[in-house]
Length: 297
Image (cartoon, rainbow, N blue to C red):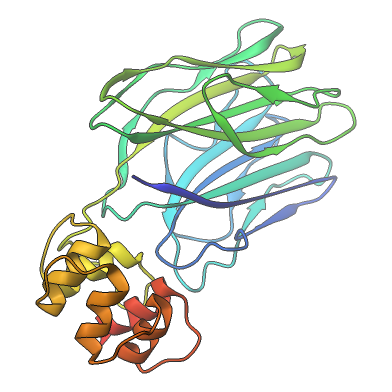
């Protein structure tokens, strides 16, 4: 399944732009989700960097409420070190959150709902139901509230990955949560509960496709997971790394490091060490070293 990697967030007041950094630990090839907001509908909201694909028509107004938002995704490239939120009036408040996942499908969005906007002053934001297309798909919940005093949000099924609350009048918050849905089918709705009520807010659910760990291609230069790389090297699909390594080495039943040592003509090296030997590298992690092997294969 897709795995959570890392998240980052940032906010400010009375500025024309806001930089949300790429999360520490995220790397090229990872799938990034961005939630951006400005606390008034009288201002524009945009992104300085290109290549982000809106999840819903963006920027959008929070229903009849005075706030604007952008929700978007992107496969990270080496040059994607940050995303910059922009607006046209320097008296508003900007907030942004980015969460990154190891999902490698070429078209990674399995399902997406529609924004559900608040119509009255309540403590909840609802993400409407979606249909997941396979077992164990990861569902993301994006929630936001405009409130001067909001300081917490929770959702019983979901794990919070990024949540940012500012201070001051009309502060806007952004929150990204996720869960793994064990069985394909209808998932949701999901209701996030804040510590204070507000009439301005929304919720949105979506699901991520994992992508095959077999023969589908990725752009050169990207770091891929070990399992993906072993399957590509072996010409197999969806085997565990150990199984694919045995196929690649022409062995049967060896553990991962045993099969890799057999392939390298060595013995006793640990998995990281033998992968670096095969890659002609030193000190790389197993994902990085096996990606390097695949690049030269």
